[in-house]
Length: 221
Image 1 (tube, helix red, strand yellow):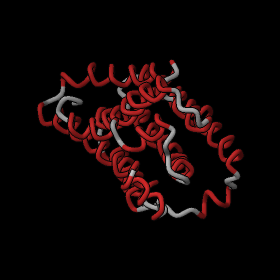
Image 2 (cartoon, rainbow, N blue to C red):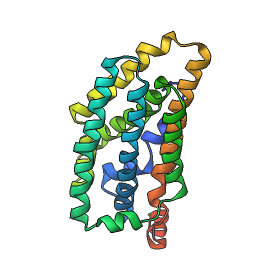
Image 3 (tube, one colour):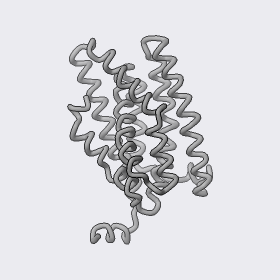
Image 4 (cartoon, helix red, strand yellow):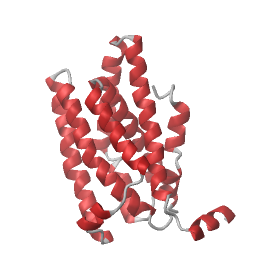
């Protein structure tokens, strides 16, 4: 699936946001907007994995998905609470901030995948998202971003529990994918590719409010 979506994959793992995080060159406001959007999606991801748990074929998969949901509702949401407090982002500000159409499209597209498609398709889509994070965050972590908020976010996505989760999800595709009919395999590949496309647009969104001064500086730099 990754090979079939190689162009889209490369665009996402080489996205400007990933490069800027690694180089400590995020424009003002971009990280805060990204975190607001990502916080929303982490909450949505709990629902997505909840659908996967309900549709999972065995108790073994359901048990593992319960641990995924636990990690989202503890480590990741705790990170957001702590970081928003550091940045002075109140709960009221979180709810008042507008969400660009591409951010909402990602949310609604992934919820639709979870609600209406198979277990294997849900795992395929979320594997694309989480494997992608592990990949670009591993590169960023090696470069050592100095911004403590960005650095901690990156570290969350390279620590062993997250890497193990990505490995488990990939193993699910390898376990169930080969026995599916060709048309079903095509739908898994489409879920993988489509998730990456939505992720690219999602990561574009925090830059939409860049100041004209920064854009001009970037173009002439």
